[in-house]
Length: 378
Image (cartoon, rainbow, N blue to C red; front, side, top):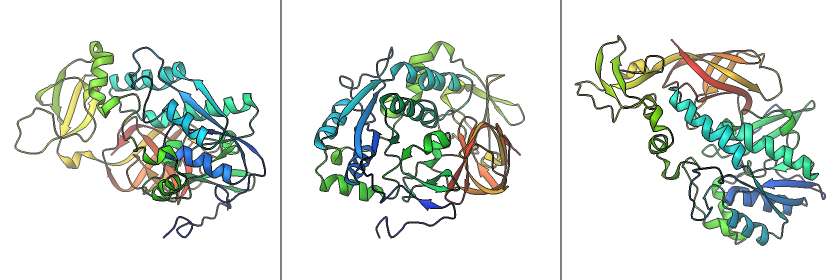
């Protein structure tokens, strides 16, 4: 079944990311050297847009990863240049190393040190990639921007809405909860109405170099994906051992440093117990790791802060759905939201609600916005 055949319907209005003709409209496409963004540029060119490509370089800050001479599967300058050349498109490069280090890398380290498990990809999309892509497009005179994210947009009554991508396994709307009308009214997401399989097929048919590029699952600034090694290298002097206690405060052992543990973790605790114990809480104030049985991981709700709402206003409806991590399913919930805060009551208890992660709020396939989880409830 093709992406077109699987296309959903929604009451938000006209879905406008696939099939529109560009009629020469100028668009600046962010390409990273991966298959999704390169096919996004190809699709827009085929639709008649006047396409220019732009690659953000992130790796010139002190102690940035050595990606074989500034190469990285997430952001490869040489591959991006080859793609632009293959598609006969003008190509631009902008160094955002300083902004990336400040807003994403340093913030990630600080959050871990404070006993919070951050979501760097969501923060990067909110504060670096889209903000600066929009600003760069305006500076260069481009009225439109585009990326290779697996999401779609729709328009109704003068407002733009963000919808889940058609491929449920690749939908990236969760990471884009921080976008607003200013970005969305200029944004195009050409791959959101295709499956990943279809995108690779298009790349292969057009002999794009990115057809053979494997998708990276790691944090781009943490080579190999081991964030513990990264933290020990970047902030070892701030990682202190402390007590492991049960939910009643009884001492069970010693941890190696709160930043090295995550909510729901079972292995690597170094405890000798007859029952399985999981990390329930990172008690930053007392530098204690709280552990308990699996049932203690379940929560009736959460509070999230630093909220953003796609239309500029919090939802008026309370019966909605919430997603608490990228790979989790959306679950029914009662939602009470203000501009900056949202309180969520799940229809059934959820496991491992983790401070620092994103609580994304949906109405069906429509993303309404969300915020950063501050604490669990119940």
